[in-house]
Image: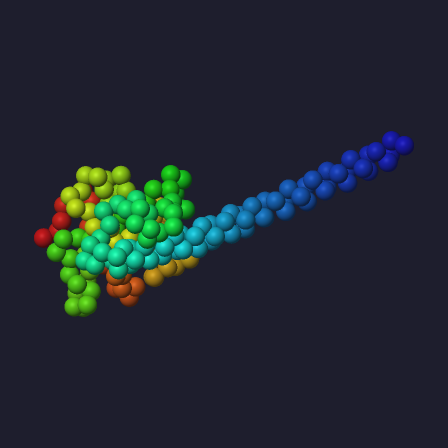
Length: 174
């Protein structure tokens, strides 16, 4: 009888070892899959904000929203989405920059990127879109960019041309 218990214990230990090895292999694959799903969600949510600004432009030609809440209030977006790539969910906001060159003229467009909480400190903010605050390297390459903070989603964007970026609080290059 004691021999049977010994074999059962050995089989149980081998089974646990096999399961542990399987989990060690599965966890990175699972984490990668979750990250890929978050990237797809980032693209979906970013495009929702671009569409919301477009609808706002149709309702109020020549005017841009001053806050994301205004997009919701004016029924241009169904709900305010959070940034899926950060824990706090707060976006960096892409703003129209004064003196920005027109895309139609072929010149490089200039945008300002500001943290969402800084909008209240900016005189007459004109929201064009959003960009993730995460600086992590992405799995997917989106519009030739490999970090989430370069995946821009803004109204009037030319995906073939990277805009000139001015970050809120930085002095402008002359």
